[in-house]
Length: 464
Image (cartoon, rainbow, N blue to C red):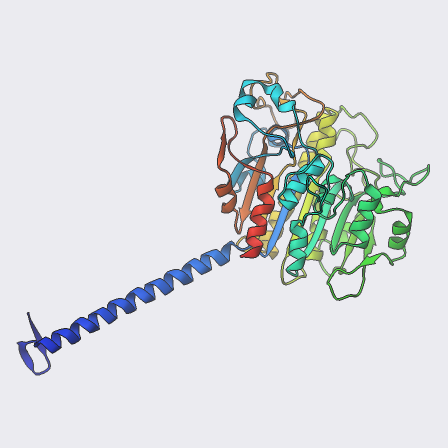
């Protein structure tokens, strides 16, 4: 081999060849190391981009695939119109409690199989919040009644702001499952007291106001304080004295209590208190139990005007929580979809579902304006299905198309919870990890994951 050098063209001696070989090897090694470093940095950045600063879990209690479809058809006359139905991750989710199962083959063979061994909201909330299966009625404890950590507590340990929002009482099963620990969901007073006087939450919103009834009118009979932690706790809230240490500095942080719709609306932007407890002027739900024809078409009976919508509560909650530079973790529940479905109140179920859907829109708007999909994870799902809702033929999965403004043909096949798969949607940082967890397949609903996977994925993301 001949090579030209500065002195002219001449044969390269053995030493020159050795030096050239070593230089080439060093250059190749340098390129390899550079490539590895670039790959590692790229992988790290990719991994870093998966870690959400904000996590928002939205739960429509009792909502199945056909509940979503019924609201779609009534609102716009076609399927797939809600903002979350366009999320990149669209799956199904199993919901059974400890000792239960979901069998795709049995569900396909006999729809009545879905009525056997369903979960309740407490066990389902615990599964989603804590990542463990437990018995029906359990709040934040495992099957042996031992407390297990939830994702809001993990977020608090990382310095994030946390909260729960619901359209039903603040100490009801779903918010309680994300914020408390108790062997029975029925211990409302103790759960409420734990949430208000012991938790580090910055936001609690919902119903349970002892001074108002379900039509949002002042109560005329004895006051019921159980949902707000008892009379002493409620009096402490009214006096601005009820408090707990929210920032781990050893000093109790009092709650700012709001009750009127105007107060909720004023907090959607601008300065916000450190801790906000919003108890709407309604006893057990914002709208579903108001007086009037419960079988009427949606909105035929005027809504309670002095209570906030779930979207209004959501905006206020985000306005409080997004002041924390380390991020937030928030659970938002449309709690009365379930209650209307239990009673086969199709019109009111659609009202509750659409109220929930507007809250999802509020969250998506917030991400666009104040957050970032690269550092925010939004999950939209249900704790279980209620009513085994179908069209006229219970063996067919969907509902028949109908024009907007008309309740579609709906057949309620059960008065209780079912073991049906429920819809699951996700978008944002780390959302693709749920696809990896969806290793099972249903012949009707496609790939599905389990409700415990929500906490498992969120825990793993918070550790990255």
